[in-house]
Amino acid sequence: MGDDLSVGELGRTVDAMRREFQDGMASITARLDRLVSTDVYTLQSAHTGERISTLAQGLQREVEAREALESQIERYQLGEAERRERDRQARLYHAIVPLVVGLVAAATALWSVVAK
Image (cartoon, rainbow, N blue to C red; front, top):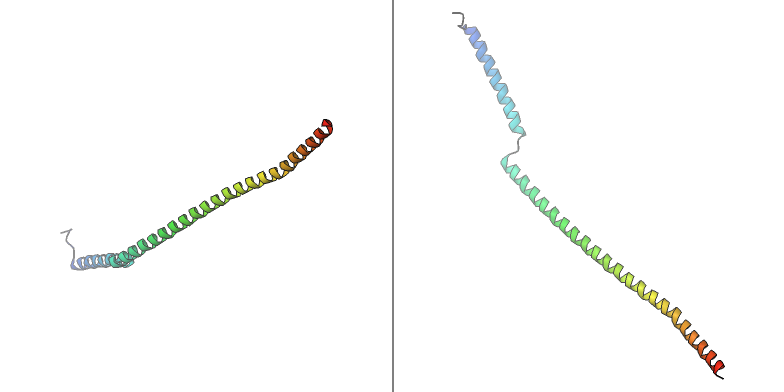
């Protein structure tokens, strides 16, 4: 008869179990309240997907614009190099041609003096 519980002890045990059960349910309810519903999650996922897609398109446009700008800069630099080369050649010709003409004139004058 040592294992038999009295009615009062049995009532207290059932009451304690009831309180534990209610605390457990309150904890589960609190956790469920923090969860997002499937509908909200689906909407958020769709919005996030659209936003990522929009950002990816914007990034692609920026990459294309940067590549176009780099191409323009490269063409400009090549054009500038060609222009500088033409200017250098023009300056060289402007210096050499008069010098050659002067040498020819001097040689002609010297030859005419020597030939007499």
